[in-house]
Each structure stands twice: as structure tokens, then as C-alpha cells.
Length: 351
Ligand code: DNO
Image 1 (cartoon, helix red, strand yellow):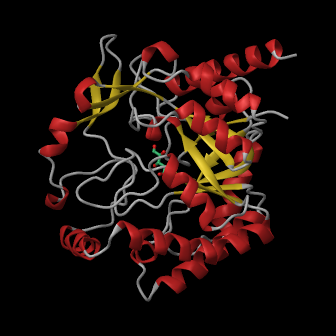
Image 2 (cartoon, rainbow, N blue to C red):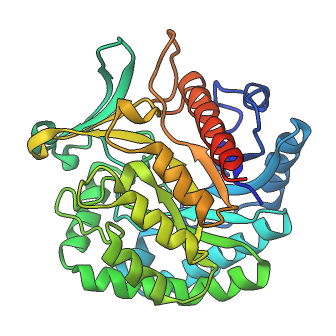
């Protein structure tokens, strides 16, 4: 029983190649997605088979999808949601047939992960992604000038305004009810197909731009897991997303949910929480570079029998690399190697 090391790959457009990834020691699976289909629609069998073939030809497993995105109508609980839930179920079936074991998704209204700057220079001249409260206050998503690599870029200014208006009537409790409805729809299919669903925590783990966010802390994760009490309804535990709030005890939480058998995928990232609630900076994976104790997190996983997928999350840009912010090769490869080292040391010391 061991963790399964994995690495996110954005497909043929990614400057990081599958061969690059395969050369990182102990690399097991690719984490990827079909990117040529609008949110909510069914992925073609051809596109799925193509990704699978490329991955396996490179000597890597095709077992994790990040993400099958959830259509906004499902989050908003609109009448049209049933069609999108049916499509979602079909995607689970098709991916299951192709050998996928775990699907990561999120339930954040409109925006996925959010930072205020993508190339902040750190003391060592590397650049990283940061979230500064003072910059957030100056941002207005409705001007349409704001965009991040994880966001759905298909919104026009007008459609963004409309969707914001719709959310203004939606309370947190409504969002919970819509999430429950979605899970009740898809989890039986995930069970039949033996595909573990793994929700990603909200990043950052608080409400932004007045939009509700609910996958934010221990109380809410407890509530989430009870919405549908099946091991197929599990978590992508992202240490950086939950760890940017000092209210979350990451080691305790990851130990608890791993023990329950509900952590299927882990995103390992270190963040430095700034004093006085000023925000946070993404840092190198090594514990002392940030606020999280990466050793204690890996030990909590090991001690509680973690055998799911894990990937180094966001890296800094180092050694002159240019590319997709957070998703370059070098710093994520260093992260993978560091995590492998921690795991080997913990394993051998426990024997
Ligand atoms: C950011 C990622 C997220 C994540 C989604 C999952 O780097 O962790 O974009 O993939 O929230 O649906």
C-alpha cells in the first residue's frame, strides 16, 4: 500500500511534456482533462481514448481526471440542471470505461482558484502566485479584465454580469441544497463505475467577490461527507487551499478524513500566511519556506493508510522557466522529489 505519485498535464499545448514528467522519479499517473468541450457537455470517446493512449505510451497511468467541471446551472439549481447532471453521469461512465479511478471537481460559484498576482518576485528571485488583500479590494471581476489560468474564459462581460445577478439571490444554504441534489444524482453512477469522486476545497477557503463558498473548513467538510455517505463521495484535499486560513488545522483534518477512507486525492502545496490577515504567498514545498508542516502532513497520510493519488501542487517559476503560472516543470518536479523523500523516510522509520 502506498501513495500514488501523479502530475498535472494540460495536454498537447502544455510546454511540459509527458517525457519530462515520466523522468521524475516514482511518477505513476497523469492528471489531466479533455479541454476541447464546453463546460457541461459530454466528452467524446475519441478524445478520452487519445489522452489515454498518449499517457500510456509514455509509460504513465491514466487514472486521474482534474477536472470534470460542474455547469453553473447545477450550482444555481436551475431547471436545466437535470440535463447537465445526466451529461455528467455519462462522463463518469465513459471515463470509468477508460480506466479512470478518480475524478476531481469543485463547486465554487463562477470562479475557480483565485490569486491577485501571478508573478510576485520572492527574495530568491523566483516568482510565485500570491493573494494580497489590498489587491483584492481594488479588483472588480465585472470589468472583464481579470482572468486566471483556472477560470472559465467563455464569459463575456454581459454574461458574467448575468451570472453574478443570479448568484446574488442564492444563499449558502441554497448552494448546499444544490450540491446535495448534484451528489444524489451522480454518486450512484460513480459507485456503479467504481470511480471515486473527489471534491476540491475552495481556494482560497472564503467567500470572494460576494459569491458564496462552502467547502472551506472542518465543519463544512464534515457536512459535505454526510450529504451522501458513500466512500465514492470523497475529497481532493488541497493543503494550500485550506491551509491559507490559520483556522484550519491541516494535519488534524487530513488525518481524520484519511482514516475515514474519504481522501482520494491530495494536492500538496505550501503557503505562507501573511500576518494581520493580509493574505498569503505560495512558496516552495519545503516546510520551512511556508506555514505548513509538510512532514507532519505526509506522516498523517502514512499513519492513516493513505493509498490514493497525490500530486505536487503549484510550483514557483525558477531557473528561467516560462509557462503556465503555477504549472511549470522544475519546481513541481522538486516538489514531487521532496514528497517522495518524506514518504520513503517515514515508511522506513516506521518499520
Ligand atoms: C488550481 C487547481 C484548481 C482545481 C479545481 C478542481 O491550480 O487546483 O483549478 O483543478 O478547482 O476542480
